[in-house]
Image (tube, rainbow, N blue to C red; front, side, top):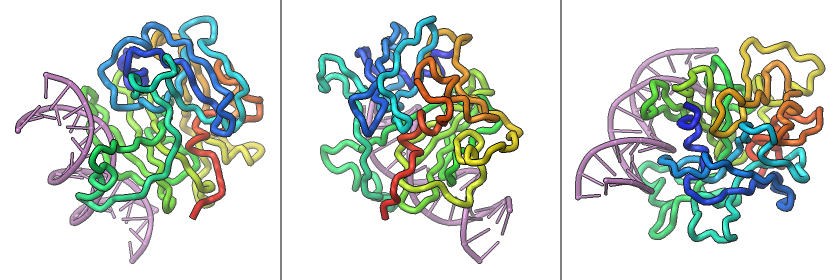
Length: 278
DNA sequence: CGATTTTGACCAGCGC
DNA sequence: GCGCTGGTCAAAATCG
């Protein structure tokens, strides 16, 4: 069950992918992953999530990796360190975030970005699972749905959203696990470079409501689960929607101060605020 | 009436 | 080359 769920999150090769970069500002800080055999098993879904890996493995009593110099504004992405070589493990490489030009004209969009010999650039992705009744969790940003596709072997469709902020190219995908319909898989792609919208609703999971002393409890819960394939019964509850202090609960893998937020540690590469670039 | 969602069509990448 | 699949577009429908 779980193996299927996270097939896309595996390193899609049989290489040892053992480094997780934690901080965009400080590349020297990183977490080290000790992948289990299950993670190194060849898998069939290689096209997704090969750039970012943000799940922690909790099937053993020992944390599978420890944080080293993690910063609050850490970004989690993933790369391979096998032999220090890139040639044979392209699916595991870490790539820096880039802003490509937008080419959305029908019929031209992919041709322009995919000239002869050039591979289409893929933004860094970050994926996580939440337990929720609703598919779309509030993260403080405004999203516009631009597509929905049926997922193979699943009765639940995958929805595609784009950040509504002008010039922001961040996307996210939301799909419900067909093995455990209570679980929602959310995948962020790209990085926000603008502030949170001022008119947005209070985020359910992400932190703007932390600015308020005692926010009312949301009616729906979003619990963030972080784990890797293995023991389904041993996942980590990393976040509860009624509190953003959950970050400390995440700490078996990420050492986050008590007052830090999920936004500060997990999807920060995608949610962190930087001066808006016009 | 503008913003958002729905949905069928289209396109590219990949495997066979 | 062909079929499958994932991702995106854009017109129409719906919403607020």
